[in-house]
Image (cartoon, rainbow, N blue to C red; front, side, top):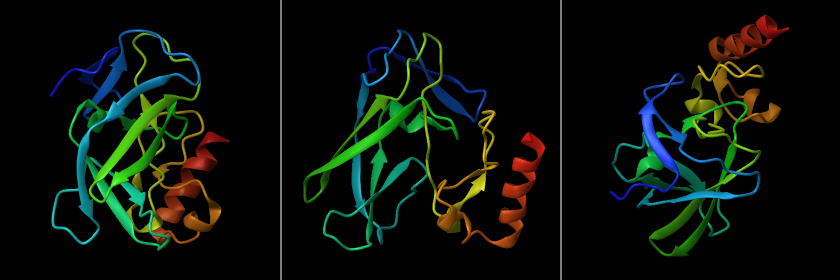
Length: 162
């Protein structure tokens, strides 16, 4: 796998591995493109490093873009410094890219908001001042679908921050 210009994989303070910058990125600047393998939602594969994206057929169906380069180690943050965008190229090819949402200094870890659905939400360890306590979509309607034991964690984390 070719190295991505301006980025380096390191041990992360957030979780496992992460990717830090070796040069500065300005708000709105393209950070990188991500390479991957396309899977339908019903395929049997490990989705740990996959982007979960809406299908472009107008249905509620989701598709997976299993990241196969350094972007797989971009960690979640409730206050991210990048956003991932994507488009469908053809029946089995996606294109995903990350754009800086603010200025990013050399040595800073690249993060984006995973925005998990309530049914796959998990505890968050991003350490951001506005951490939700869970890796979950920030939409109150999605958070209302959380199981009670996770909803309590969301409330507890927010209460501690106040």
